[in-house]
Length: 261
Image (cartoon, rainbow, N blue to C red; front, side, top):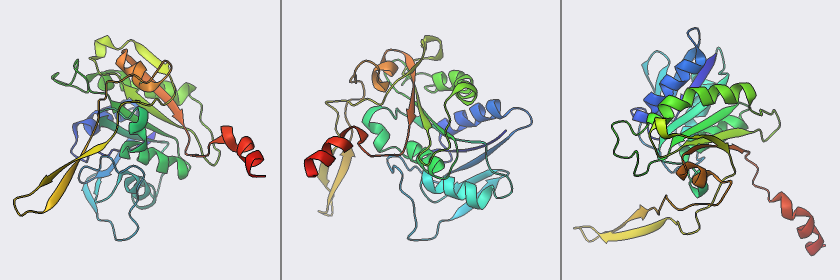
């Protein structure tokens, strides 16, 4: 098996090293793992792509490349510039430092890579490690993902639903904020929404009197309701959420047509 991996935390991120081990386990002794990842951190860039300036690609080692661009750029470059002779069987993105559950999914560069993979016609899985009081200060906060990642990816490859439609399915996986031994299993759930969590700003004035601001996050421990990703994670389960890149609100199409007729 041939696997392309990327992330949004950057080529030197510890979560990418975890994903490399997961991918090597999944690919098997005769498989290949190709790394094409951002040269610097690209968290929060979503599905952005760079088409207004050239993008630098640096070969660091055999099958290992750093890209001065976004995770979606890395997927495009991996497919069309790097793996030109033999395409990947699956694209994996992560393991993200922090959760990409709930509304975080909309901002995530980790998810953005999988969106681009799906649009290019490839199967993809995003993997993220939720942080919380039970693992954030652990010797290895990625332990849950490191131990349970490969078996779950294999299970999805064997038994998951994979489509070849225009907006094909990809998977968003979040490992719970606990150590590996405390993971209770996995749950197939929908994307949740933290009702009291918003991004905001915190402004300040620099010594040169220029005005700047930091983007601030919100409480990641708010539950999102039964059957949703964040709640499953907080309760100790790995969440598995099938996704499509179709933003149409299909449930209101008929009613809207009636209202506008």
